[in-house]
Image (cartoon, rainbow, N blue to C red; front, side, top):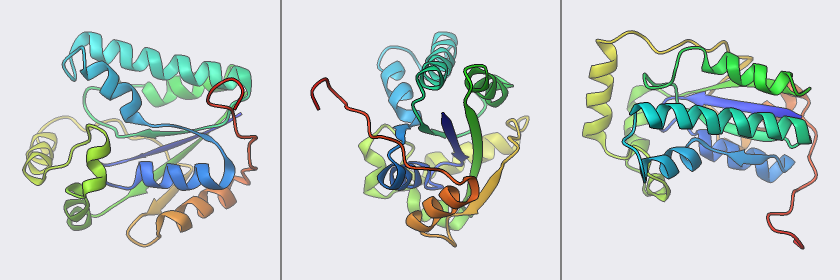
Length: 188
């Protein structure tokens, strides 16, 4: 089992690259907002139950996917409400079940991030999609302890490489093989 753990700032292109990977190699896309959006329907973002359940869902999904041999692409935006050590716990959950984790950082400069942040595609999920909020978050994070640094097995500048090119770089870097597409529903 392979877990491609895509991480980077808001609007770095994580979901777009994840979808390109999935189109090429049929890995499941387990993106950040599947869990975040479900939990914020019930709990305030960053509240203790939100933080606890978010990580529990993430780790349980990784462990089950690894145990069943289901390859995944996961998207993750490091931010202060994520408990320290989460990437290591993700690796442990996957490796204990015999899988491998590939950490891939997607980079984007501030100007391009600001251009992308208000793109209509970002409204598909409850993603950050307004410039004033992005700027407030940057100011707040500049004055707070840094979020955890995740060691990257590969870094890609998404301003330099189009999503399809980024996906191919990931496939080539880790010699990823296409997975058998899974049925979403019985009988598919």
